[in-house]
Each structure stands twice: as C-alpha cells, then as structure tokens.
Image (cartoon, rainbow, N blue to C red):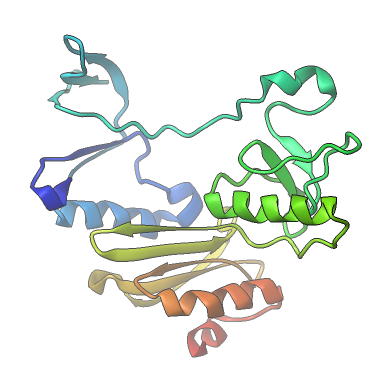
Length: 233
C-alpha cells in the first residue's frame, strides 16, 4: 500500500509488536521500520468499534480516537476449525500428533494448523501456524502411511518481505534469556541470535538470507555454541 502512495495506519494492541516473541529491541526496530516508510503506527491501541454505511468507513479506538478509512486489513490470529472431532477423543483446540502425524486414535493422522506436533526441544506439543510446517507434516503423514520413517522434527520458521527487505526467523525465541545482535539495525542489515541457558534456540535475520542456513545448523546442533561461533558462519 505504501508503495502505491496510500496512507496507512497500523494499529497494534501491544506496546511493541512481537516483543513477547522476538524481544523489545526487535519490536522497536519493527515499529521504526514502518514509521520510516511513512506508516502511522499506533501502539498500545485497542479497537472499540467500526462504523460505516455498507462498508467500514471509520474506526473508533479506546480513548475516543477516530480514524477514517477506505479499507481495513484485520490480523487477529486463527483458531482450528475442528469442533467436529470433539467426541472422538481428540482435542479440537489442537490435535496432538507425533513426528509421523499419528494421533492417539489408531489409523488417524493430522497435519497442518489443526495439529499440535510434539517438539522434542520443548518437550511438549506445540501448534505452528506456518505454511512450511503444514507442508512438512503432510509429507511426514504420507511417509508414515507408506511405511517409511519420519525425518527429525524441523525447527519452526517463517519469512516475510517488507519494503524490499527479507525478514526470516527460525527456532523458538520465546523464553530466551539472552539476545546477541550482529550488524547494524539502522542499516537494515543484521541478525539476532537468541539463547536460553547458554544454548542457541532461535535466530532472526534481516536481509541476510545466506546467514540463515548457518544459524539454523547452529540451533539444530543443540550445543552450547556461542555468538562468536555464529558470527564466523
């Protein structure tokens, strides 16, 4: 929209977007990225109502702020549409599966957003709402049905292109107790390594696509690797 010269306002309920996952420093960088591109960013803002005649023409926020608008894009997350399994013994809030997509019901498999695969790194079943996870899980289910052995559970990952910048992420940054930044965020060319208890658990790269493979390998090795080792990659 900004590339077409459209005025854009971003409304964020949190004080910093994604700070709970990626940390406050990255959250501030995301806000500044949008503002530098001419986006009006309102943080700590909550929507009270939407008004219009046949379409949304005005948004009203808590505190009485009103915003005129021609179009609205809403991003509020998703929930599995799986109420139909409620009486089967499976959890409609997320169907627990193993590395092969098997559920606790014999001969029943699940894959995609509705599933919660077991993550050995976290020791629990976790739902990952990214298309690459659904793709891998579908392959795992087909392999299991054909009698093959599943590959090790891959780290969750996602990517996004914003203002000509490639943003990539891999791992589990939530719960990290240390972050290490390499590069200059002001130049939009850096990466962040997240560690928990001295172990690398996640990484974020900004316009460094070639760095991601090395960081993924560092995390998957599950060693006590350090920031210097990551930088050498």
